Length: 351
Image 1 (cartoon, rainbow, N blue to C red):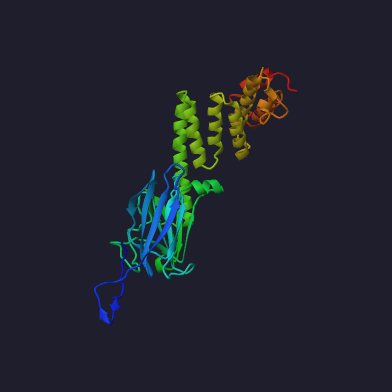
Image 2 (cartoon, rainbow, N blue to C red):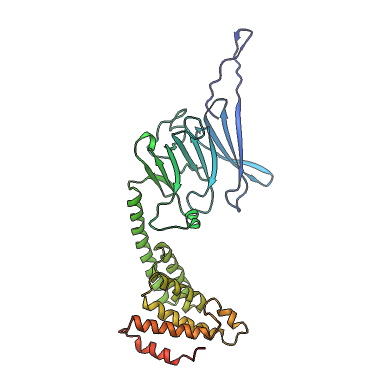
């Protein structure tokens, strides 16, 4: 259970071999994901705080089943549930303060996954107040502890929520240094890099992975596997945080799949990122022409192209003309100039 040191009871002035022991139980009910059964977590601790233990179980039908219990931990704290490792499932986060007050320092943090793995456990385990590393947790400790995402790119709130979290601890275990802990193979480890160097390292790694995915996408394009290519290009674009060439490739894969509206959107993003990218204008012009033809004969033709070609289907031709001319302006010496001029001359009159 938990360490207990009750005083000896004295009845009638004589010591007896009986003691009274009180345990306190705190109950927490939560769904870690909508698909999982209800989780019920119990905090067990003694009269005077100190060491406690978490007991995890799930309700299965009408039954409650205990699945694991934690090592000993500082029982003065609070339980939070949040997706720390970015797997779409909430983890169990135990926050406490070693002095026993709500906002005092140093703070401690322990993170468990649903299977009972202490993913915040450190290999160099610090000393604890009421237990040691043989029977207790190895908490992350600092004057302030917070979750963040060290990224070379500006992330939206949604992207931050989905990403694996970094943990920043100021005055790490009583030192005058800050520590950044990063997730490696589902366990947290202290990074040897500061925030600036870590951000640069991740940017370089993302660029390498994006380039490899882009190559896979190009291979799939050559094999006519346009859907697979679009997926690889989209992943590359996400890693590179909006590289014009990658989102242009996504658009071209959509174009070859006959998804002309989606392709126009992607080409527009590429142009927004790199207004001088001639290929994106050429690709978008071809997509406008194809969308015009696709909408031909549809009763809802104007509505079908409304968000892509302003003022209805006929406007798609005007958009194509404008993009072909922009391509010729940006790439006057391209080998494709004669073909583009033919395409431009072959367009029907625009409204």
